[in-house]
Length: 63
Image (cartoon, rainbow, N blue to C red; front, top):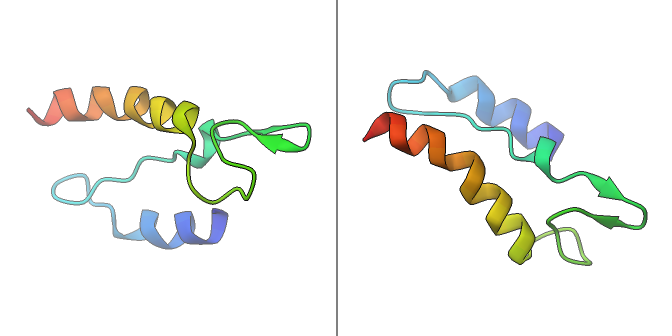
């Protein structure tokens, strides 16, 4: 996630492209990662909830 975040963050201008670091919310918890499935690729239900909560302030600002 870190290399992709570095690349995508470069394009954010906070006018028409925004960057939100969701990786900081998906943290390791023992052998698992908070918010990710066992293969650490797609978010699980908890991950989508973390994503929604993190996005809400930005979406409200844009509306």
